[in-house]
Amino acid sequence: MTIDIDRDRLVREIEELALISDAEAPAVTRIVFSPTDLKARAWLIARCETAGLKVQQDAIGNIFAKWAGSEHGAPAVGTGSHTDAIPNAGKYDGVVGVLGALEAIRSLQRSGFRPKHSIELLMFTSEEPTRFGIGCLGSRLLSGTMSSDAARKLLDKDGTSIEELRGTAGFTGALETVKLPGNYYKAFVELHIEQGPVLERKKVPLGIVTDIAAPASLRITIEGCGGHAGGVLMPDRRDALCAAVDTVATVGICEVFPGAVNSIPSRVNLTADIRDTNLARRDAVMNEIKSARQSIAVKRQVSIHEELVNADAPAQCAAAITETLSAACTKYKLPFIPMVSRAYHDSLFMSRIVPAGMLFIPCRNGYSHRPDEYASPEDIERGVIVLAETLATLAA
Ligand code: GLV
Ligand code: MN
Ligand code: MN
Image 1 (cartoon, protein in one colour):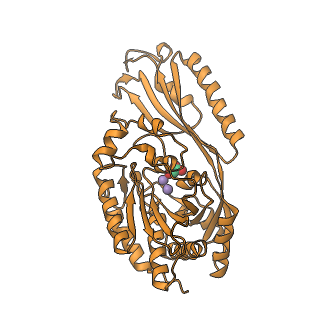
Image 2 (spheres, protein in one colour):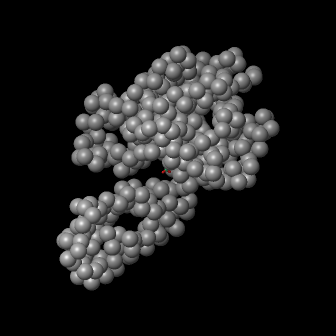
Image 3 (cartoon, helix red, strand yellow):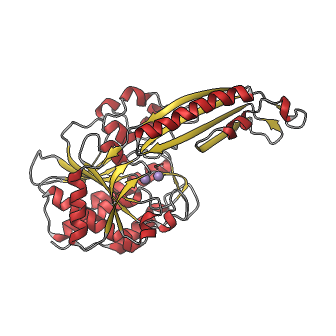
């Protein structure tokens, strides 16, 4: 079997998908269930169908594109990632794992390989937390990590319910049907850009992920006392934004109310994102935030409300998958290193129900979640070769 990647077509497809965006090129914005997300999904489905894959979508909009195996009823080998993108993102996050998997499948088809186990490409709904405040929605539901009751309560920031949004997008089935039966998959592999600088610094083309860090996210609201920006001096204030800047965490959202240049902030909504591969250490930081919150509330005379959005356990990748990935790298004489994923991925949740693993390729300067995110065609091709070889081994 010779695996021959059509690198030019894959790069063209990545560029083409990047143009389906709510941000001006080179930036990409594709928020789940927006008209742009739906257009990107239709574009992807058309490409999967052209490759002869049978496409299905579940009630939350996860896309499954199957290359049927010869052994009827045997568990499938899954691969894929996401195509949604945070505001002002780049072209490669998630997309390399979806279009790279499609090209891996096409290359296996061209090679004459015929799988015994079906090979199924997945595009997970809302890996990014932009719309509903929680990431990996599709894989949380698929794996049963999130209950359908909990999912039904989700609202976007305009207060529109997920039920209404998914219905309008055409996904009308009951959320209860999303959870996969226990033995649906035999294995799951996700190809992704590293989103950090390690591979580039070490000049190694591939990373085999051993562990995925445990993410947690808090929604914090600080209520102070508003007023005139000139008339009230600092010692007399209960300024909610002064309280916010004392908080220690990665704060990615900080909304100041009323948000006028000459008005003392009366309310601040912020999010804190805390992660570690070690659960005890991650939880210790969360406890520190809690005590800091209490002392800041006293010091600043504000009330602070904290809501836990998610606190997930870390995942270890399955030895069966990391070993298959290593063997594929060795076969193609491609150097690799074991790595920890500090970012979360749908594989974190897939690993709860199926032996799962991830393969990283370098991205320039380690940049991700920004418009100048870049992975070279050569690095993408190496990732897709190893993915294709790994899928072939697992599906044989
Ligand atoms: C995923 O996009 C993450 O924030 O790790
Ligand atoms: Mn991302
Ligand atoms: Mn991603």
